[in-house]
Length: 234
Ligand code: ATP
View (tube, helix red, strand yellow):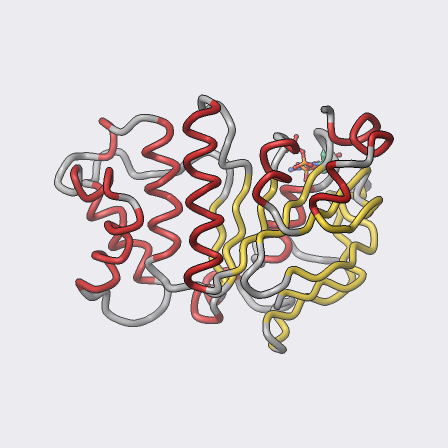
């Protein structure tokens, strides 16, 4: 379980997170929703050690993560897939995947690769192809697969749906749902596409101007007309 307590962060005078508290439970998808500038990306960057908090704590399964440098996070079970699908286009699909296993500090074995190929058969078909031939959806699968190579217990995902056709978004979200159910992985899913995110999430946290304005079951949030109109855009 990821426990975030009173987490605050700023960019100079701009307060991006203001005493944010919530928990993301093991084996669950927790969606983090909110308009542009609500603080969603900053939340993920702060949890994964890429941005320094100026207050509050983060714990993963009882271990404090705040103060831990970003490069040690994979070893503690935390993986972060930033927005933008940063595959290395000159490398093959398999070489990209192998990079994901390095952070955990042990050799990448064939079983790690085969597990990812089972989850994403389209990557198996293209394992020897350079990543620049992949479509947007396939690149998103590759960056998720690369993160899974470190065998995380908590996966932070920033806007995986961005720029993808609804059908592909549906496929990726279904896959995430399957992953948390079969592997008791936890996912913290940042999305602007609130309707789709809530359709697969168990819980949702809504941010506005760096503060938590709602934290509830996904179904309860999706049924709240006032909240949807004010913060979720559907
Ligand atoms: P989006 O969906 O547009 O990425 P977001 O909810 O992820 O929005 P953040 O990107 O975390 O929001 O931004 C939170 C606040 O911090 C905003 O006011 C934003 O302008 C500000 N901010 C984000 N990055 C920086 C930066 N590098 N320098 C200064 N201010 C920043």
